[in-house]
Amino acid sequence: MDAYRRALSLRPDYAPAHDYLARTYLAMGDRQKATERYETLRRLDRQLADRLLRAIQANDPDLESSGY
Image 1 (tube, one colour):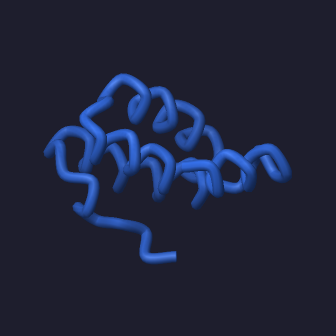
Image 2 (cartoon, rainbow, N blue to C red; image 1 turned 90 degrees about the vertical axis):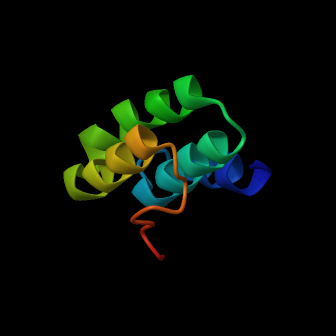
């Protein structure tokens, strides 16, 4: 998580870091924080956000992972 936060501090618009951070939150059971990241990601990369939303809805952080 520190690496993703660091990446976002350097480049707040880096969509993959938002995706991975959201999936980490989801894996930790924090759907609220994952959903907050989804909201940010939706403004940056709609396609990636749609895949993340499906993962959140299924409560499966590995579902449709971006694979970056």
